[in-house]
Length: 401
Image (tube, rainbow, N blue to C red; front, top):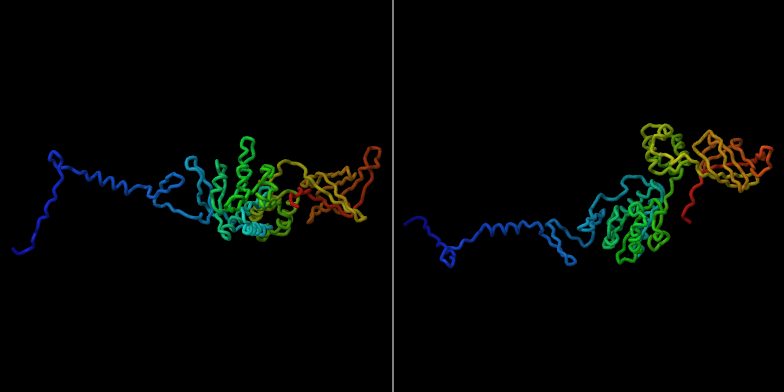
């Protein structure tokens, strides 16, 4: 027979049971099992310390933490972990003062040191501490390949977790605010003392910013073994104030600059204040019109501690101390030093602003010897004459040598 030959494949014998009936294999159950096994989400199993953790196939493992910025995250069940966040960096902000030089000094010290290095940045708010933190973090990543770890919350066992990290830069911004000193929780700050000691087998860079040193554990201060560096931040001087205004307000006049500089001599003006003032001046506002509407206020209307340097005709000089309201232009005010038995009477409207304070020209002040002789009314009539009188704010004594 011509054509295609068709052969029939012999049928496979089906298994039978003891009773002679054909056994039925449930293929659906087998296929269901295989499908569930293939779709199991935990395709990666990690064992550590006798515990097995299950992850999906997106898990990645590293022998070293990638260089980036991370924040510390805490969960009561899983504990601490790191979450990558936006890079901590200064951005396009202009740097004033000695920030760049100080940053380079800290990073050079870290490279030369064979153990951990710590730095405290202290000073009032708005002085540029946060800017230096960002500068340090960015340069540590780029120059030293140190990941940035941001500590923003107080969590149980935090110090132990940080000690498990490799070589990183750990940043504490406003340390005493996150970890307040209190009788109820003495370990809030003391938990870090051994970590900051630098005796860990892993070298790290610790940067701590502080607003109020009185709220910092005493064993963190004056201990170069824990914090090799302690940088104090002071209010910008008149030259820095003028430079800032010229940079931030194109076309600003010298008169406008002088107004703000004089204000900064009477009131502690930080970079936050200057930023607000510059914004308004750049919008066409006049300083005297807008300053009263800005969130720049004296805590209370009180007098300021001042010093008056008096230069005599014989070349000698005396400094008398007292208080005065530098914003009260018209009232007569008196600074009396009973030790020197000398009193200075003046009005601020007669003062001439200078680089060192406020000078009073001849005839714009009265100098009186309060030691006598006295007239019938009990007041002295002995007036003194001087070559010059300069009034300035009494600055807080620096902690530096």
